[in-house]
Amino acid sequence: MPLADARTLPIWRRPVTLLFLMAIAMPLSFATWSALLNNFVIEAADFDGSDIGWLHTVREIPGFLAVGVIAVIVFMREQVLALVSLVLLGVATAITAYFPSMGGILTITMLSSIGFHYYETVNQSLQLQWLPKAEAPRMLGLLVAAASAATLVAYVAIVMTWEAFDLGYAFVYMASGGLTLVIVAYCWLAFPQFEAPNPQLKKFILRRRYWLYYALQFMSGARRQIFVVFAGFMMVEKFGFEVHEVTALYLVNLVANMIFAPLMGRAVGHFGERNALAFEYVGLTLVFLAYGGLYWFGWGVMLAAFLYVVDHIFFALALALKTYFQKIADPGDIAPTAAVAFTINHIAAVFLPAALGYLWLVSPQAVFTLAAGMALTSLALALMIPRHPEPGNETVFARLAPAPAE
View 1 (cartoon, rainbow, N blue to C red):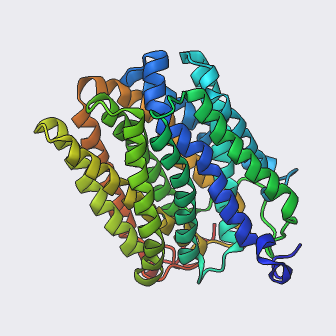
View 2: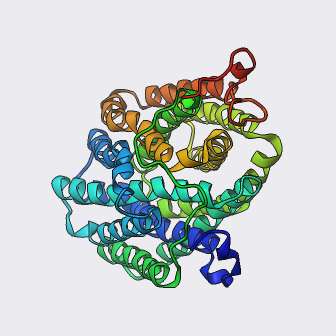
């Protein structure tokens, strides 16, 4: 069904509703897996900092290979691939607890990661194709808030029932994966196949005029790994957080996202991508330096928890990267470039967690100092975004010399 005709459908069958349902389905599995992960691997397989680094390196390999989406969409619609990827994520999450060993955890992690990363790749493409440019920042903020709200329900259940009913990892993982599968089944049955007005190129493309977007994606991926891998691990290893305490911290993050993500979407629309990203990177630099201070100066657990929440809030501004690309891209480039950008985003992710895992054993504060340097590098790149990006005006240097066509 053409997108223009979808306006005549009832609200529960429109493209934007499908985006919201998929945004809810994904974190029910992935966020629950993440919330329990550090406690599960320490209790079930006696992981240390090096082991967790290797696990996240394995987890990021499918992200590095996300460019393979280009080959898949030759034979499968992006909408179908998104739902199939969610099925794989849900099934892998459901059976995670049945493989409590290093080899088993790495295998299941690889499978769930394929589902997660392929979903995220095509989901980003569908969002940018289906949402009007004027509405994209606000709608992307609402999508983040919806995902946070859905995950909030799951996390409240964990916090309230984990100790009270002596729940185990197997039950929680099975329940979260099963809910994802239920939502995917509804999406498959309730929605038609939507056709965007601009056919997507189904081949690998790497355009010189997108170089700043590629560079920002690379730095974003490198910087994100330190938060995802080591910030949460720190809360368990250094401060001894239990499952319900880690999940409670995630709950605070979710509430903050529900409140601030829509506001950040509006802020991106009002202040522009350059200012929004610059604000994010300055804030992240300060947060990462403060993380190091937890080890240098022995600052306490309350500050650590506060920094963790602030860190998570800043990452919500990453939606500005999506809208920056939407403004500078040729309409037919969105799907293949989303795949290429996802791969670029994960180049550092393949080696950084394992390498920094060894550094973590020697000096955790050095890991966070390195992250602060990455945030400053991202800030320098963000300042190269023009106030009004568009094709032909991709960077501030476009005023000095015409941007290359390719």
